[in-house]
Length: 340
Ligand code: FES
Ligand code: CO
Image (tube, rainbow, N blue to C red; front, side):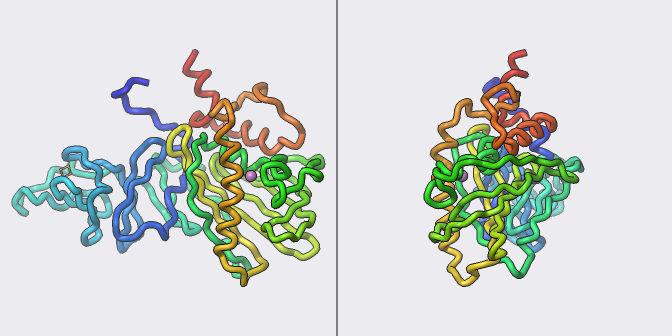
């Protein structure tokens, strides 16, 4: 990759709605988020949150260093003002009557709020990925949902998603809470393509779901919703307690990601939310140590690479799907392609 050449954005991931921030973290000041190595500025207007390329067309300053005034984003360098559609509406150095050059525009990215998250698409084309998958628990009044702390991990996004989908590690990485190494065996299960995503059969796991000392058999179902979006449901059939999680990964750079997770439960509703946030942080810290250690850093999509066992069927489906979709970012396929 040349030093002054603009990097090429993965066209598949650029067409996905990617999680960029929790909506509650965007206040009066614009903020910068790097996603797929692209610097994006997010700012709040009366008409919702907007996302632009974080670059002023005048002299290339970062707009995120500026401020929001009357729903316009004001560049910190010479004060040009961009409205919500990205059009420059004021150049303070010229008389108001002079026409503003039509090229004076910011690059606007599609942006929306859903499930308390802000989602951005770096490519504007309408594709299959234009609708976000359903996460019913979010709007279901019998569930309470908390937001896990945003978590930076120095690993490729597909490695991070695969770890979330990996049922075999629970008994070891999360021994004493999500699993028990004396109950490590995983019964045979299959993964099915359903409408537009992969869904696993129910997998029974001996676990203490919330670290509260209540061990039982929980029925796990994994769903691979999109390349960097997955969900998990754990059901205690005896008590009808359901724990659900929506897991969304932001690829910042090829080996740097940020995890966002919605954690929902239909039980223990009076327990303070902070308990669940802290417990989730403990789990994610345990995963981080292992996932950052994995080599190769990028996820091998060639199924001949690494060794697969029947309990790895969710991972196998995930690798296969990334391969079919042609996701090259954070995957090993890219290296082979570049060498050809
Ligand atoms: Fe933004 Fe000059 S660089 S106004
Ligand atoms: Co884990």
